[in-house]
Image (cartoon, rainbow, N blue to C red; front, side, top):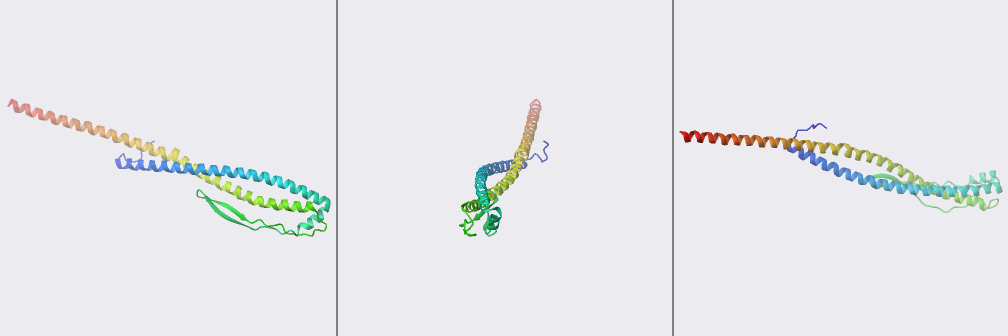
Amino acid sequence: MAMLIAPTKSNLIKAKSSLNLSKSGFELLDQKRNVLIREMMDLAEKAKNIQTEISSIFTEAYEALQVANITLGIKNVEDMTYSIPNNESFVVLMKSIMGVDIPSIKYQRSDILPAYGFYNTNLALDRARQQFNEVHYKIYDLAEIENSIFKLAKEIEKTNKRTNALKHIQIPKYQEQIKQIQETLEEKEREDFFRLKRIKNKIRQTKRDTENKTSRA
């Protein structure tokens, strides 16, 4: 790697300072990346568990709905579902994990209110409605987690690029600059030392020659 800066002591100090700053930045980013990865893995495990729960609840809900369709008639069940109100009461807030804004869905569970008459209905329909209502809360939780995982993954990718740039480009660059500046300065010091030594030797020799001439005179 060619040295692009002048081999001076001031540039050596600057290069050492930049190296220390790059190493500190790398350590901080590496810590941040590890925290984000652990957080993302925890969320991935939660998402897996919720997906399993949703699948199980859906199975029970569709089984109950199938019984209701058979016992009450598909058309009657369909007509009764129109009277069930949509419950979409939730708020999306943001929270921060290591500087990453991720969503937090806040909702309040509400009791299931009667939406159809008990005449010509049965327990299977009530069971199906209860299970589907539970699923929709689980979907809120899953949506929050999956969106959080996506945002964390993007931040991890960005952090990886920055840590790799520091590790493989910035830090080696400053290390090479320091090495070359030090070698150049050391070589210059050696040259100055030998030059000074030659001058001193020449002065001593001149002094001796002068003394010898004086003594012979």
